[in-house]
Image (cartoon, rainbow, N blue to C red; front, side, top):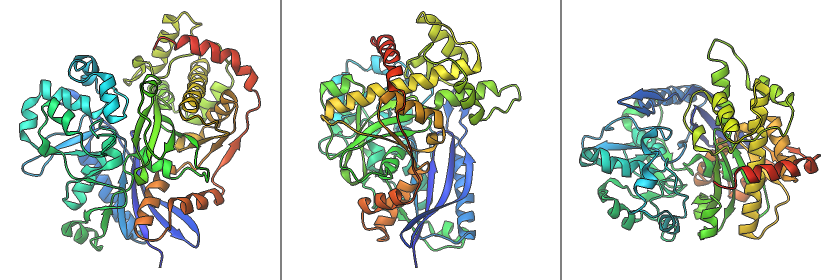
Length: 490
């Protein structure tokens, strides 16, 4: 009988529990529970509501048992955030959200101790204020007593696995987002850890995708009336799981994992860590099988999501489909933004921020909903085009298509503009790439699927993709020039 993995896929705004099965040559995903991931303001910071999220996980496990059961559990989440566990085994406090402003100035403040270039050369990861290393630097400098009480540091997927198993482990792909992993040894960088004044005891043994955190606690197994199934480490950073499900048989491919963030990158056998890579804003994060994922973090559909929240604040209910149509109706190439400008990081009033950016950069100020959204869409497409160019120059490879994966591929306008701006086809799908990749890794560990290549072949044959051909690339050339000029000083 085919084995089933209960996949938990946590995004920055929502999460879901899905049963993943490989049966008769097909990968089958069945959603059993979906729930919101809504941050809370607590103790002066924006935080994740962990108690609520774990309660929803338990509901997901109950629903999965009711719908046929499972043979293992695996968990992926976003990167960089973490919880500190005290001597009593409890969280010291709810984890702080990466969008909290506490670390905004930490890269500058720590530049003497942690020079950006030296840090990049050791870790392969782009220094950004949201990274775990700067969150920990903040605690060292502002809340040092917290460290005295901490026994373990658990990244978000490790935290949920700990709740299920009682075992403290740090999964490799997620750990690389901390900027505390040595890119050569692929272990904790003790030199950086010691220089920060962090206690080494809080860092747990590292495990790789396919290894097991532990078995489901007996009391939880009894509560759910199931066996003490293994909790398997998938590539627990959601981007690493998504890349596992890229439907390509080619050795060299580029992808955009489209969601709240747009992660544009490529899978490599080993990281590329040079000054040029750093200056282009690229990072090297861990992938399945100790591959390296060289990518750029782009502030993706967060910009659209926040506009929707703004427009719906007075009781309206504009759908994403409505917003897409509004953008289609607006005149193209009027104004542009730099999607990664720091002014867009924090939530609230996104349309006003877009207008302020255009005013500040002496561009026509978009007024209507459609004009503002069109500005965002075409700016993202331009950023994708320049990121593609950067990756091609670094790797020496001319890519003939872009794989767009994740929930953002439901946005046909984004896919169309990407193909037209980049001048090559955009292959959109699967939309559930992260959950599929999560499940694939665990099914390989269970012996259900032979290899990553075999899994990708199944996805290719599944009909879950749609190709958008470039039809008007020439129209974008002048716009690309304007965008390049706009973002030249960043």
